[in-house]
Length: 364
Image 1 (cartoon, rainbow, N blue to C red):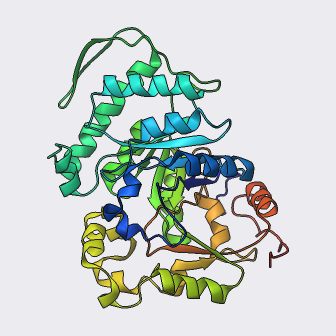
Image 2 (cartoon, one colour):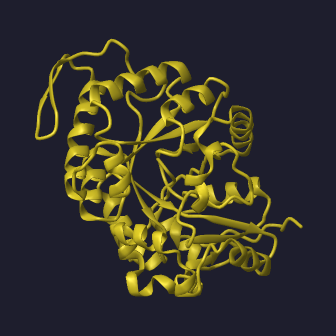
């Protein structure tokens, strides 16, 4: 008998960068100085539109080309009422004591409306620019210790003492608590398909994030993770157009999916090969063929592969159909445009592993 779950879906998005437009290419972000500056007027407007649309959380990204996500979340949170923020950060760049102090202060300013996306690292070059020279597995070991210290402070069971390979804390105290109406600490999302990433998510996180793939490959791992008490989320891109032909036309223009090896920039391939999760997705030899049909799914309300995602996903916290445009450019969900409120309602109420929602009137 097929195992099924009833899960609540939550939808999340990425906060636009400063100066970002609809024709903007992610590959050019390192060369655009506007990305390094907050664009509060436009970003606050986007946050309020997200609130009205029922988006749960917005990702504030981390990287050398972008503003600090904690400070940016504070500014945006104080100008909004309901939207949550997913604060991306990397372990090892701050003392865990300082990190918790900053987050607890942020929670007091915006009512605890944020969660964490903890990343062990990105490219070795960028990690070294931050003074981090550890190997891939060592970074995950350090992140485990980092989050152990953070959890100890959030428990508020007296002074924190910790002695590990990477951190030593003696008589740690923080007077500023985590402030929230419904929890004592932020939710923690940990991404990665490698064994260290999964182990870390199970030990320290509330959600394991991974890149999307065909449902048959997702289901076994997602069910195993879900049975151990944490949520599972998918990261992917969305191409929304009224018709399938327009979706394909747009995907070709944006080079969202590359059909020929010569069209794959070498630096993207290098980054992709370093990511263990992406190696597992297709393998180096199959990378140029990622435009094959099963990786460009249609979200039309009919019985198709995407509906089986309900079986294995819980949205970025409680349950998952996580739809974030910050995912790799060569992977996309092709979504025909339906009335958003109706489609979202049907997805949220659909039983995991159940029948697809009935067709909704298309928006012309």
